[in-house]
Length: 124
Image (cartoon, rainbow, N blue to C red):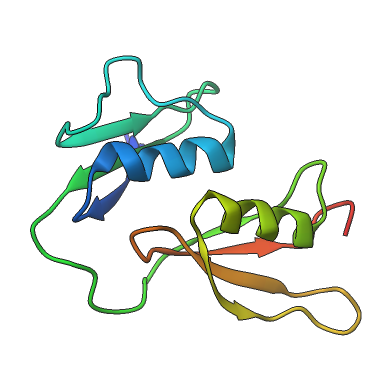
């Protein structure tokens, strides 16, 4: 029997609840009912039963580029609209790799500096 991925864990030096709220808003999935500000961890469960996103407080800050990241595809929005929405939630722009033909992606960072990419969706 092979293992299954239970959580994808994000280390953070700030409040795990705050970082969880950013991802909760971005992905449209709620934080666990028992998570509160100041808790040492916060969880976003996958309603379909896939891996949850777990945010855990650690003492050391991020020091290098992520070795793994999410590639997000917008649903019901263009890439530009999704990037604007993410920035409005607290993300910051790292690099725009949009090509003249519309392909490509935009690299952003969450409030703790974890990189993620927004690809082109069905609306562009």
